[in-house]
Figure 1: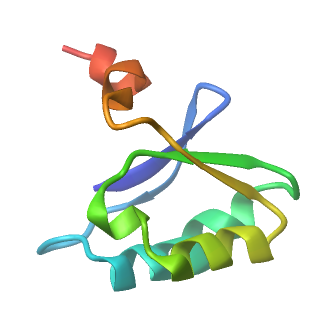
Figure 2: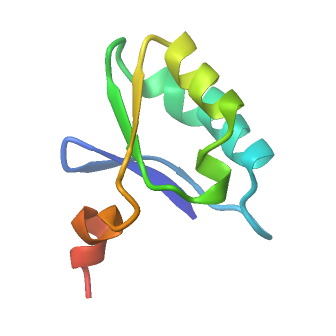
Length: 84
């Protein structure tokens, strides 16, 4: 499953089979997530291999959003890591 956290709300969930790759992730961005985001939204992602393609950045910036990557140890700051 993949989803986004926006203002303490989980949005754009997608359940998929197999492994995530940049092709599937970019389709998710185009079809599901990006249409829900307002112009100027800041998108924060970790450094998963499928998050760091040039195409991913292009898609996000084309929609008027800004992409920021967490530092390598930033997963410790991610809200999902607080769930037990």
